[in-house]
Length: 240
Image 1: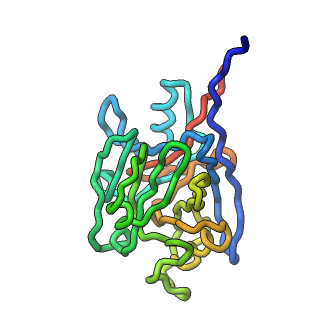
Image 2 (image 1 turned 180 degrees about the vertical axis):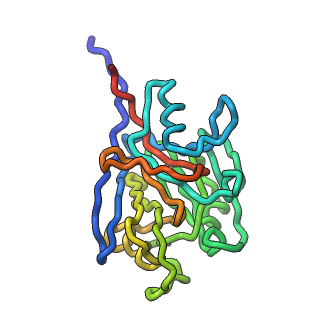
């Protein structure tokens, strides 16, 4: 009798694309076969991981590595998540529903929830009313696209332009598409990337100037100040 081998996590599909004259790096994850996780602290020391290299060092202990990763939501100066954060079904920080300062508090904001076989961007109040059983979750804001509509506060001619990154999910939850801009763009343009170019009905903003990407396929492993939450797809490390 042939032995059934466990399926290996598939790699993210990373590519460079242009939309309305701006350049983006886009990484698409098939949730049905990918191992998508969020990372914050080293479970042994309790210290903040803060970098892609630190996450890779942690994964190497189990013969794994990152295939793709990016920063995954806003954080305080000590790298604690600003809003909801769930790692391996353990809630580390609670959900924040009230309006507040900065982009995070520009309601509606939202949550990326990763469950078995699906990932969904969910508007925060909708999430709070019926919390799903997320294995991993990270809250950020503002929402970029809500049920196919752009955030109502976005202005098409806004001069607030930054490098930006975020995530969108498909209606059936099987596609999670992450994007980071190479050029400074405003929220309206960034939201339309997810809605009009990528065809995603829900999308969430992660951050601006600190946005970073790990995508060896594109020759990128961005460095900088320590990050808070990091999201990435995990694959088996090559054997020597």
